[in-house]
Length: 543
Ligand code: G16
Image (cartoon, rainbow, N blue to C red; front, side, top):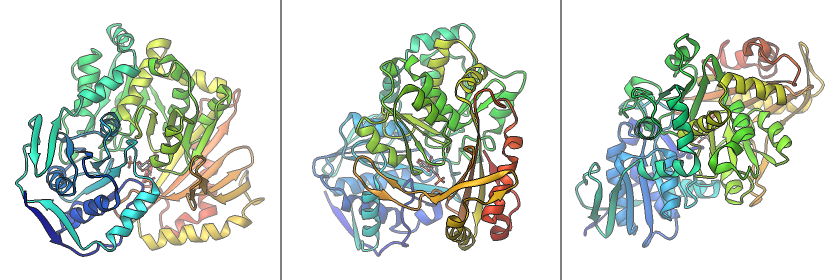
């Protein structure tokens, strides 16, 4: 075998964000760019000799090119085995499962998640560690440091392999296994959920619409929902992964999954509607005539999880990211289990899951998951909902009303201001950070500020500290506004404003969310000067 040593120069100085390194495809197509990042990963991980590496992606444009190169590089860097999803396809949760099941050292996941794909759109690479979860900050910091000094990368000098043929081939000293992208994941789902009960509900006429958004979950959803659970052919929509996601934005929210939303609000609505994103880790849940916010979904799943086979023993704890609503906290309290509040980013759940301190986790950004893998998991969330409905045999709307009648309701919305000039967004955050100490006691319309701070997190397992994780403004009565800059955008800066108002059980539980949040929305602008700093008077996306 010939190993090429290619001279290179340090990177563009950008730090990988919450989910690896996301950039425009054109950036990734520059000579040495992807190679520099991959070599930097390999340079900082120990134990490559003789180890297994998992590689897969969401099928977006440039996926196959980078996978071929990653295989050559992994072989040259000493990995003995490389496991690749057929056609280069692995959903993020399926990749997490393969890493765990086969004891891999780690995995490269090629995705820019819910961001659009295509020659002018986005690409990304993320490294997951041996527990199957995203690399923790100490690892991403080390990768970043290495990108600043890198001067060469290694690759076996060999043509590309056939990524579509299942089987094992040799690349340099490594054996490369092309595996079925779905089989192991589907088997795990059958362990966690009583497929017979869901199949019986489907046979009784319960209907489902699942929008795979022309992204990675198509093959998973078709196998599980249509073939194994017996939902009608056509249940899975947009089920073929496309390199440009059919020109859509594979983000399962009310803006980008509008067709599904409209269907679910129509008289032809099936009983259950769901969607997942580019790489299959996010989920959108809509019942007939009833949208369930991700924060509520976490709380409702946690309250009912014991009805599903894999969770009969109950939950050890719940974890949610800070901007996620406190709905889950009330469930944890009722169950007598802890609820952890972590910074945004799935990687912060890893230690809690590994330590057995939490069983279910969730984020307002449409992510829900459990200790079955170390990523959020879109198809899993749909299956847990279906398993619960198969036991309770009520509608999504009835389940939601029942939940709010018991726990109260956290009205919730997120306003996104996208593609802002970075300096303006930073100036807004800096000014608000400076103003925080003076906020308590000030009133905005009927709302009075009780407390304001910049969120920091001390990991209860390893004690590591993460500061500046979002600005929180808490009002008397439990309402809240959170301001934070996105870590996943690829164009300028995105300001996220998270709005939450709590109505206790017995209160106004069935009102329209925008009306319930109107005072908070005005207060948020007055407090942060959104229009003044950004010139924007309306958010680009409301979810
Ligand atoms: C990623 C992380 C999520 C996190 C989200 C935040 O999601 O995996 O844990 O909640 O980013 O995004 P932002 O920083 O833009 O608010 P994904 O689905 O893009 O991998």
